[in-house]
Length: 225
Image 1 (cartoon, rainbow, N blue to C red):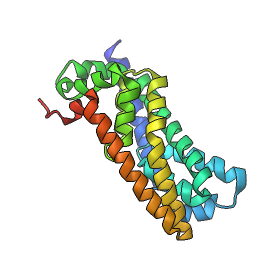
Image 2: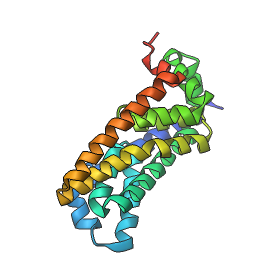
Image 3: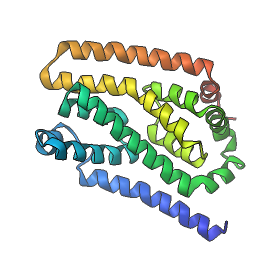
Image 4: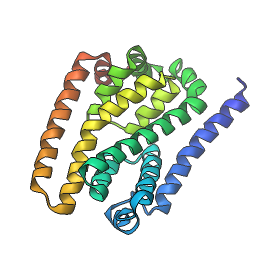
């Protein structure tokens, strides 16, 4: 591939990220409860579709996925909020993964062989070895950068089905947690808040256990060489 074409792809990749940032600015930052009250609540199917579209877009642009789940619970209650929040997160994940795979794969391969390789290759190799289990373990933790993992997976050309399946399953516990928090905040539901806290503790414990057992955890724990 020519240098000019590589630069064009990297420019498009950067342009996509800048467009995501512009979208957030147009929305006034991260969409919050006032936006939900004004635009989404009591709007029926239109409100659900708008929430799904905006939730996917802001997740793809790097907004924490927990924010989308929280607003889903706040807007629609637990069951529908969980379903729409999870769908929005997965669509955003697929968008940023696909964007990076389409535009950044060749650039990433060169960097893996160059000065960044000693930092990124161990995690990339762990993900490539078992993309479903490694992705699941990383998604279960409430730390880390969702967008960074999406971009790394896309640039490393992980198989989409196990990556997205691991993401969906790994997203689910925290989606439930934050949707319950959103509903609990709106209706002042003490039991929803208590259940959310308990589920978060279980999710973190499971994620830590999987990471200790999996090569991805060792790659994350290893100091940069």
